[in-house]
Image (cartoon, rainbow, N blue to C red; front, side, top):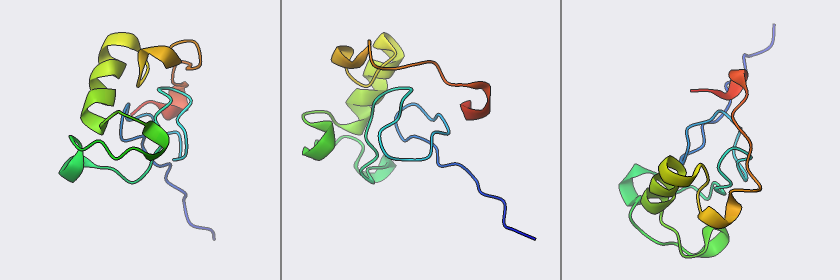
Length: 80
């Protein structure tokens, strides 16, 4: 009997999209978490900290306003 695979939650929007670049908010999971949510790491998320991306998601529905046309709503199986 196989193990049950539990999807990974996006650290920005909490959708269960499995890591990588989230199609729901367009945040790229780079390992940033609560401990350093206010730090701007650069890398795939540019000048955004995780905390700022979460605020953007609450306001714009995307981790950055420029991604509003690239995101989609979470599917029922992806909702936290």
